[in-house]
Image 1 (tube, helix red, strand yellow):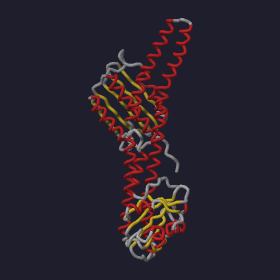
Image 2 (image 1 turned 90 degrees about the vertical axis):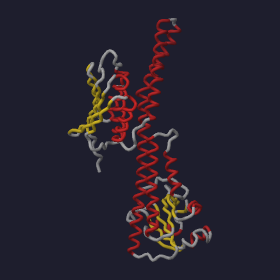
Image 3 (image 1 turned 90 degrees about the horizontal axis):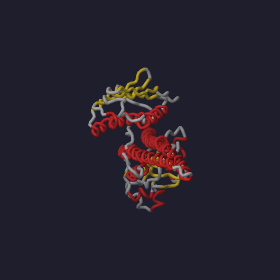
Length: 399
């Protein structure tokens, strides 16, 4: 397992800032801030482990180091009990450096006096509290591929490493490794979310904007031909079509900007829908009943994203076109079939109802197809509209 944490300058607090700044995009939103916050919480947990371990073994200070991706250097990701300038100096060391390199190589707890460290930085470097060093390999010592780093502890006096104490130190190292893996998994999860969001943006642009602009381009070519042939009637019609297409594109761009400024809650679909319902009621004044009959909604990211966007589009249609005073969102799962239904008591299909192309139904159906589902619409004039998304529970990943 290769580490994915970048150099942070030695201090755990600096590492938190690095993670947050690394994951924060240029235009902040709730999703990115929450992702950065989660990583920050994981790092705070790592720092808490280090502080606890130092106190538990009666050490004076400690440093957590991981191997760089090329395996040539140790990089500090947590430092406690040492001055900031010392943490900074120890932020990068050679992978074979002293007792740390020996421990990583042997997969065992190694000990030494601090003379080697002092020889590199001077006798005052670690002061009186750090005269002896214990290095504990991180990860499963029976699996060389899992040896991602070293926990280094500093003591004021020489330590007797008994078998029992070595087992204790290895247990602490395993806890530290768990914390590290959580951080890496959070980072992987963030990257997957980011990729899904980018794909969603690409899909939205293609579905909502590219086709309209392509139509405008075709009409522009026809307009030029009409002008060359002095066909004023056709030229006027083409110019009118282009104007309507550009107006539609401008409206679509505004909707896309609004759409991607308000992304799904990173905590998952359940929380995202709760927030969506709350915001809908506050913004529109329409009563929205929320009936979620599932104890939890645990679906793959792509499923949750498409479901969220379909439901939000349905609610936008209610607020914009229906004239409803009451709406309802119902979620059920029967025999492996998920059903998300949005219904209202509005005007239903009538003369004032917008054309299907403007209602977003086709886009909702395309979203449903991406998760193997269907979207159906039942609408009766004067009695309201019901939009229902149905899809089968995704197959569990093997293993």
